[in-house]
Amino acid sequence: MGSPPDVAPRLAEILGIVLGSDGIPVRLRAWDGSEAGPPDAPPLVIRSRRALRRLVWSPGQLGLARAYVAGELDLPGDAFAAVSAITSAGRPTTSDPLTARQRRRLLTAAARLGALGPEPAPPPEEVRLDGHGRRHSRTRDAVAISHHYDVGNDFYALVLGPSMVYSCAVWDDERTGLDTAQETKLDLVCRKLGLRPGMRVLDVGCGWGSFALHAARRYGTDVLGITLSAEQAALARDRAAAAGLAGRVEIRVQDYRDVDDGPFDAVASIGMSEHVGRAQIAGYASHLHGLLAPGARLLNHAIAWNAGPAEHDPDTFMARYVFPDGEVLSLTEMVGALEAGGLEVLDVEALRPHYPLTLRAWVQRLEEHWDEAVRLVGEGRARVWRLYMVAAVWTFESGRQGVDQVLVQRPGGPLPPLRRSAWV
Image (cartoon, rainbow, N blue to C red; front, side, top):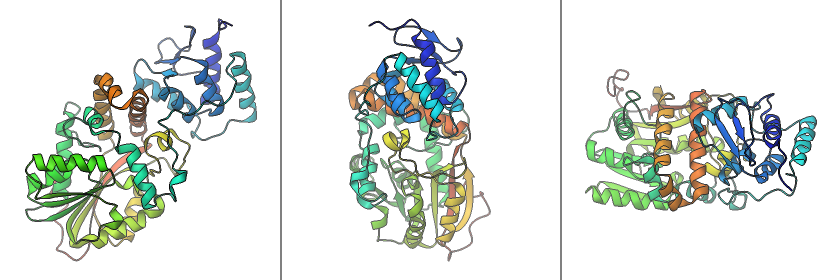
């Protein structure tokens, strides 16, 4: 049986139901070549009925994401514009259920296109951690971290570039290159921490060792870096040895809760506390307080949720594909936890405008090296990374998320310098 001549208009009706909007904000092209939607809107291609069936079973963010990861839906043009348009037109939250009337309309429209049937299996890149114990237990955290970070160091090198830094950079302006912006960020952290030769520094969630190497090479410190990713640790050790810093930089595969060999003169936590969890954040602050020497500083660099109360939702694209068990707290929650943990706030700096620039640079690198990325990790996982970074641009540009550096110290040392004079 051939496709009816009006596939795209019917798909447009379905997409409008899923998005909760009267029209669609994209130029939709169907598997039969028909098109619908505003001619000048960013393009979206639905390649098969299977993509439509995913929307019937999961009518929202997760269904759309599954279809994209599986290659049944595509964003062939400006992906930033397409994702922004779709997300801006969507229902208030991705987990809002359809009304009974919307569900009937969706099923009727899908039936007309021959798209009803059993739920397709999720793409293999999707993960569920239910069988790995209690959320944010040591065992389950290790599995969650491995899912995201142990996808191959060569793949991350394609995306991140020579800096191998996987957190928001600090840009002087839009013309600043990614590597320069990342070095600026690393140096800013070092200066905020007041690093000096001979200091002992803990790098919590050290990644591939970039901050540890910078602090040891530029500031003469001794750094212990910890990560739950075996692949990260292996490359970080190799980089330290290649830089002649193996005697100054130690890398461990270790949970932060198991570090007991303080005190440290400074602690950096850059893009790690998002993995801690709301229920554990008080213990995180308290444990790091105990590892600091009197008067020593901690810098916590983390994404912040700016869009009102948020609870962990296991049925989002990010939870199923990107950061399983990740929880983004508000700045208020983070500062409150650090203060409750006995730490004094010295400075808070918002970096939200810097993250879209960082993400766009990563996406550009991924797209420029797309064939190599697919060779390294497969097309599905490469699609996961493209979609998540493109979507993240919208969350930061729209103000739903921010990223903040909170500088605190353990009381008991000398007064800190006049505000910002030491690091600007």
